[in-house]
Structure formats: C-alpha cells, structure tokens
Amino acid sequence: MDSHGKTHQKEQQDDVISPKPVTLSKYSNRVELKTLLERSDGGARLAGKRVVIGGWVKSSRAVKKDSPPPPPPPPSSVTVPPPSTSKSNVSCTEIIQSKMSIFRKLFDVLSGGGKTTYPIFDKPEVTGGQKATSPPEYIIYFLISDGSSVCSLQVVVDSTMSSIPATQLMSLGTCIVAEGVLRQPLAASTKHVIELEAEKLLHVGTVDPEKYPLSKKQLPLHLLRDFSHFRPRTTTVGSVTRVHSALTLASHTFFQSNGFQYVQVPVITTTGFGEMFRVTTLSGDETDVKEEKKHDGISIDTVKAAIKEKSRLIDQLKRSDSNREAVVAAVHDLKKTTDLAAELEKKQKPKAVTLIKPDVSKDFFGCDTYLTVSGRLHLESYASALGKVYTFGPRFRADKIDNARHLAEMWNVEAEIAFSELDGAMDCADEFFKFLCKYLLETRHEDMKFISKRVDKTVTTRLGTTASNSLLRFSYTEAITFLQKATTRTFETKPKWGVALTEEHLSYLTDEICKGAVIIIHSYPKEVKPFYTRLNDDKKTVAAFDLVVPKVGVVISGCQNEERFEILDARIKELGSISREKYEWYLDLRRHGTVKHSGISLRMEHMLLFATGLPDIKDAVPFPRSWGKANN
Image 1 (cartoon, rainbow, N blue to C red):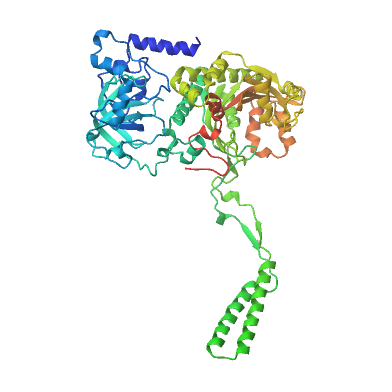
Image 2: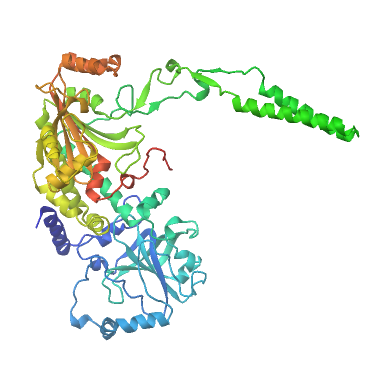
C-alpha cells in the first residue's frame, strides 16, 4: 500500500477508536457536510445527533407519506456500508423491507413516487408533472451539497414545513438551511449511510427554473464557461476548485517548511519582455491625434445640398401647374446631380489619420508601465538579501492565442535561491513537484477519487507514480537527437538544433520516448531562453531547464541567472530590443555584492491540468481571461 493509502487508512482506524465530535463550521451556525460524510463510517455513528446544515439542492424527489421511501439509485459510486448490527436488533419490518425491494418499487410507482435517480443536473420531479403542486401528504427527499465535500447529504423534509410550493422548493439550485436529527435511512440503502430528518427549514433561497442555467440539463464543461458565476455549484468544478486550493496551500507549505520567505512582487512594472499589457489612465481624448482631410475639388456635402434644393424645386413646379417640359428638365437635372454625388462618394478617399504617441509624462506613473509577465526579476533583489524567497501571483501575457493551454492571466509560484546553481534549481523543482502530487493524494482523497471517476481514471495512479519515482533528466541536445530519430512521426516544426521545442515535440518525448514519465530538459540554446539566463561555457547554451509532464507540457521552468555584470550587460546590448536604461536597477545587483543564484517558476493552472486530467485550461480557473473573452 502506498503512503497516501496508509495515511487514509490510519485516519479511518483512529476515527473508529475515537469518533470525531460534530463541530460547527467556524463563523456560521451550521455543520459542514465534510465533517459528517467523510468519516470512516460515512457518519453512521452520528445517528441521533441534532445539527443545522445548509446547502444547495443537487436533486430532489417527492413521495406520498404512506409510500415507502424512494429506492436507492443504482450503485454508481463507492458504497460506504453502515456498521454491522446483531440479529437481535433487527426488526421484522426491516427484514421484510430488505427482502422486498421489488415490491417497494411497485408500491412507489403505484403511489406516485416513481423511479429515483440522483444525477448532478437532473430536473426535480413531482408525481403528476412539474405543474402540479405537491399536496401536504408528500415527503420530499433532497440531495444537498454545501461545497465542503464531493459528498452530498440526503435531507428528508415534510412539505408542510414551508409555505413555498413544493415544486418551487424542489428546484435544482435552491438553497436550504435545515435543522433536524441525523438518522440511518429507514429503508436498506447502498448509497446513503446517514440522512437528516428535518424538523425546521430556517432558510429557503428559491431559483427560477426557467432562467437558472443548471436546471436545464447536464451541461458539458465548455458550455459551463458561459455561466462562470454558477459553475462552481457543479460537482466536477467544485472538486477541481478544492484541488486548486490544496495546491495553493501545499505550495506555501513546501517553501515555508524549507526556509523560504514569502515576498510580494509588483503586478505593475516598467520592465518585461514579450507581448505585454500596457497600463495607462490616458483616455482616447487625451492622446494627440492629427487628422489630415483629403479633398477632391468638389465637396460631397455641396453636391448633397444641391440635390436637396433641386428636389424642393421639382416639388414646387409640380404644385404650380408648370408645363410638363419644365418638370421633365428639372427631374433630368436632379438625376445628373444624383449621379455626380454617387461618383464622388465612390471616388472619395478615406481620411488619413496620423497618430502621435501619447505623452507618458501626463500618465498616472509618468512613464510606460505594463502588467508583469514574471516576478522573478524583482524577486532576485530580495534573494540577494534574504537568501531564499518565493512569491505567488498573477502573470499576464498579451499574446493573441486561443487554445487549450494558454490564458491571458495565469498564476505562477516563483522562487529564487541565492548561492545556488542550475542543479540546485532542478532539485528544488523536482522535490516541489513531487510534494504537490503527494499532498493531493493525502489531503484531497475524496475529490481525487471523484475526479478519477468522472474526468481521468488514471489520475491517482499517475500522481502516486510521479511522487515516488525519480524524474528523468537529459539535455536539449539529447532531446533533439531523440526527435530526429523518430521514424513513425512527422513534425510540423522540423526538430533541429536551435529551434524552440514545440508542444508536439514535448508530447512525443513524454509519451513515446519516455513512456509517460515526467522529464526535465536542460541546457537550452541561448536564443530560446530569457536574456538573464546564465551563459554556459560553450557560449551557445544557457543554464535553463523545463519540467515537462505528459499531455500538458511545461509545468515548471527554471534557470541559473547570470550573475556576471559584463556578460549580462553584453546580452542586453546584443538583443537590442531591450532598453538598457530600464534595467539599470537590475544591473546594480551585479555591480554590488553579486552572487550566483537560481530560481524556478511553476504555472499553477498547468499543474492543475496534470493533477485533474482536465483537457482545457479554461476549466482550471474560476474566471478565465483569454483573447477575445473576459466574461464576468
């Protein structure tokens, strides 16, 4: 058994020996469903406890009071059996019920209950159709989720508890706060170990089923993006969000436990590279624009005025009983003028506009500023004083790309280590990545189990294997050699030394050459990596690396930074496109007390893709921003 399995088993054993008490959610007068349902016994030993729960309706069903409870749904998820009981404690009624499931289903159909299912997006059903109002003799069975767990709690409510019509009460998405007593289900069930028999409804937040998007049908992930404000209520997005939260906490845990200091770096910067978003407070009216109008001799406005006047003249001639020849002549003249206007409009040249660069001295900061693409440069200044530092924040790229691996706004975990060289940075990336994989398996057990069932069945195995195995390391030159030897694959970008490795190159290396392993590629050509990367002794390659995972690509990038002033200064001049003046502060770090140092940058959304198996990065963030799209 692997380590995460042992940890989970130990928690179950501890819970059996000494059951955890029911505790209120901090800052609210309710109990989180996670504390009830994620116990080793599924919450069975809590029967008889009075609690207040709150959540949103995932599915619902109404049956008559004199009908048996709705039969359990088909066993489509992991079953948590209730604790065993002795025969002396089993009543005759329970024995009969456990042996007569067919009759129960028949009774339920005859009484109007029908078949019960609990899909995520099913519309609630009431006997007689949606338009019928449940009479007082109905019992409603809800499945409630409060977002704390992938599990849902069955809540049994008498329809007389609320003045709200049962059909409205049962609508998917309705928020319910209920007080009652936990009990084991009256009928034998392989799905629900514990349920809440509600005695009071403390709050009901209704929805309009005609307008609430999640009540229509089971929507695929790409359609849910149009409803970013509602999609976290779905089980899949809820699980992904909890995994995302765990990765964030794990990142802070790893660096704090390894002696790193947390530092906040600016989002607005004067330095950077690549396509960047400009930050300005100047409106279009404040920019200097010079317009040059082209004239073609005769003004089109003059001709249009003549047409208007000639039309008025024709009307006068017609009203004054003028002879027919005068009217015909006037009409002919109007036609000629109209034709002239059409010809002028056709030949008219557009206005030539000359844009003059805005005066940045009038801007908010008094200089050109941008949204940052990386925090590592600023982080270096603190590494030069505190030794080991890290940060976590948004990074922005203005590339006009719309694909499954790119967003305009993504979050990076970045670290800088003084007195460290390339091998140290690769070791840090290796241990950090494995720590994240192990942390998810140990702390998000139920979510990972659900994701492996609904999204990617190989995800838990992949994370476990990665956490326990060594990562393969080889150079860029070796990678090109592997690609050039490929006889069964034709690449869109021919692999030759000096080209940047593309997505198809990396996919072939991880999937075909390394058979699904996570790899680290190092020692890239200097032309494909940032200018601040340390130049190797061969003068052709730099001390940079990428940690590459199957199906996703690069998750962590890193490098040893150039600490030698003369070489860094020469690299800036060599590129030419970088303003040396803007990097004087960065060069100062080499002028005064320079030190060898290295760092890494983890792309959080790409890590989440690897951890969940999601196919599109837009489903890995709450509110994705990409080229042409910024909903909410």
